Amino acid sequence: MTDKDNLHPRNLHRARYDFPVLIATSPELAAFVSVNEYGDESVDFTDPQAVKALNCALLKHYYDIQDWDVPAQYLCPPIPGRADHLHHLADLLADGGEIPQGDSVRVLDIGVGANCIYPLIGQRSYGWRFVGTDIDANALNNAQRLLEANGLSSLVELRMQPSRTAIFANVTQADEYYCLTISNPPFHASLGEAKAGTERKWRNLGKSPDAALNFGGQGRELWCKGGEQAFVRRMVEESVSGQRNVMWFSTLVSKAEHLPAIYRLLQEAGVVETRTLEMSQGQKKSRIVAWTFMDKKQRSAWQSAHAIRK
Image (tube, rainbow, N blue to C red; front, side, top):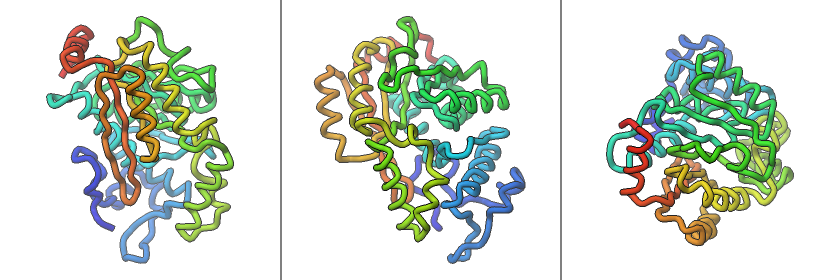
């Protein structure tokens, strides 16, 4: 195992996992750590309980997040990758200057999930204030429990999205302003496609595809009608009406082949500036597409008008 030097320079997880330190922080992790075929301490990343125990230890040690848990069958996200996403977006907000920090920076998380991972890491790393939305009431209930356990209820607000097809409608108000929206959308177009993709992953790892039944997230976390392209299309279309309420819209895009169509949509929507932020973790490559309807001068004035601190 080599250091994860492809992660963002500010990512706290670039080095190898220090399992003795993590176990000292979270003793429950010890049951899942063993020496792998390369002679390194590791966990079985195809075991959902092992991944959950590692996440608990990482969140507790690096971010002082206590009592983190997700219900069975809900997505258990990789902490280094989610942290990387946030650090790249922090650079986007900095726009070549200092990173805006503190609760004057308001971020909208579309699809916050039961894990509530972006608000938890974003608040601890930069002090940002979040609004998280989701279509799943059970996911929101668990996220609320996590916030209450960590004293963050006053800094992270959760809202139910009643429509499976709406993005910003129903959950934002005309008098609300956000520096940033963040999203990690479902990238499969159907439940069958999601299951097939997960089974392929397990086979490549030499594991039984039955493992997919116990790992990888609820169906609605992994797929939506039309897949990633349809989700991003709706997001772009709805962003037009909120162009003065949000400085930067953004979404993760898992498949590079979707980029040309997304760029065309953004051009048609009248976007002033688009940025693509490349990310990689191990062999996995992804990117964030961000867009704004304001030029740099307008963004600076917008931040001053909304008392964004740097």
